[in-house]
Image 1 (cartoon, rainbow, N blue to C red):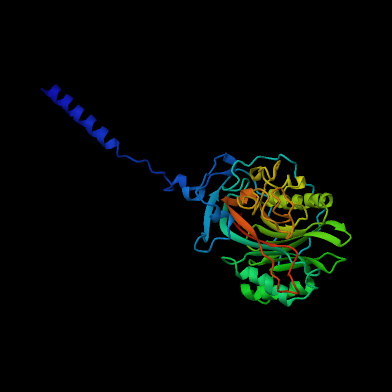
Image 2: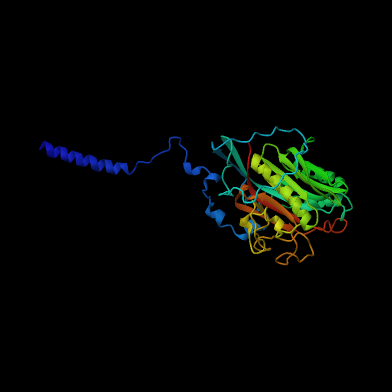
Length: 403
């Protein structure tokens, strides 16, 4: 009788333990959900994005910039990585500095493959890195300040500000080419008031070409802590520069350049431009946004080392670089090549017109492929037409470090 009772008791205990065990859930000791952490770029894990990200239609990506209601504001991500050492941080500069480094050779082609170009932390980041993502709007325009406007200021300033104000959200960066110095100061005053800048704010820079009365200019909604000027070439019009500024409290550099007309010369200058902006990525993990009149077309073989292979189409192939041009995936305007920026032309693989004005960012700093751009009609209310180039206005959701 006693043995039967023990047997019955063991059976009951076994049934009870099996039923309760199915309700047990293992909770990480830290209390964190491991799936909430972003995938490491170096791990090779690919973040495909949400269904909403993957289901964006052409108007979401390649039409006008989304409105503030359509776009996320900003979000913060924390990442802990102990994979390696971080390069020594450059000192904070209170004002302008001039780049005195020599010409940089372009990085070797076919460098390390980045498995996850859209999202993820930075390899080699410090032990605790804050990564921020934001929707970044950029305007680039060759204003033909001397040729079409005779260095007059009022009407071209109004035209620039019309583009800035008509965007579907605050403009973060303005890149201008062929700017007279008086025009630079007039546009700076207008943007200073528009952005609510203080009297001593450092948010812009101008670099004349030397012989010519025009140059290049940058304007940043986020104040700048360092300005660099790198000479990349010289021609009958003067010197050509890569002009950049590093934003305060961000590893973001905003740049402009205007290369020499003529494919072979511009190709050589592009190598120097690319070498410099890539050095900032490899040495400091800076996110670079660059606009400019590169004076070579999208499908020129000189661009192959800049455009990402993921931008390859029948209109622009053989690319093997790391950058996306914000108008390179528009299905309605020569996909891979982009919408024309030179009016009255029929060049290009789709015979829709020549594209020589661009906005680029490194592919692995664009989140989930969210970017787009278009070129804009040229105003005709300056001293006649305001320019012989169409402006490029675009947006991208970018990520950058703040350490």
